[in-house]
Image (cartoon, rainbow, N blue to C red; front, side, top):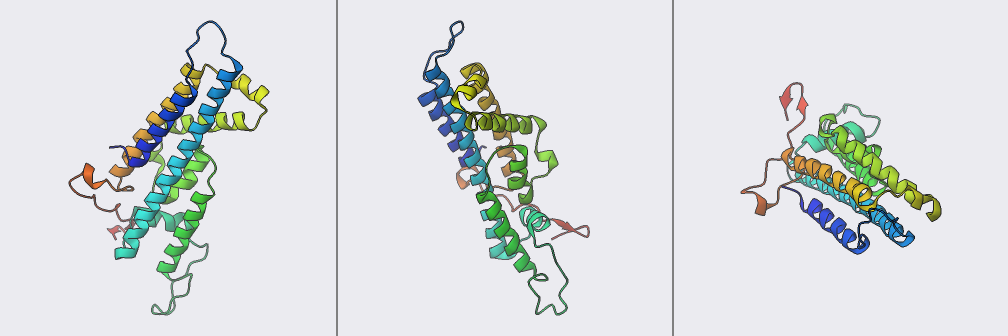
Length: 231
């Protein structure tokens, strides 16, 4: 089922639609400047809600994985991916296993990777493919978890937002297409793609399933294989 973060996203975008796209569909006559400005605001604020959604989801994935690591030293798919993408550049096997240095202490490397990912999430500023890769690949999502439709729709919405906020209103309003068929339609398509990814996060074990939605919490994300064995 969809996460609480996704349900909150849907509600927020629905409220934006009710507040901003509160004018009639026009088939023949053009939309007024006021209506186009409202549509512009709808696209920009919907983009903002989607960005907040991804950052919130990334933080929860990271927080839950960190919790598993702190409680039982579980190096699962998330922690393994963090070590691959976010660890310090230099690592070494300790000369004395009882006295490892920062670059030879697995616990310190994991702490460093977690800290780096937190900073990456805080610094995020978009929903394009590169933003999503920076948020989600270090948390265990792989190439097969990103559909081309999802990425194309995310890139289009991200570009549209940039066109609207980085140009003068007289220029940006000319880029607004039909508020309902095109602009709202694109947001709806992206939300549908996000829902598919959102549900897969629980199936992969990256996000926990709320107790009310399941008889029990699923097992932590699969451990990363090392030498053909599971950790």
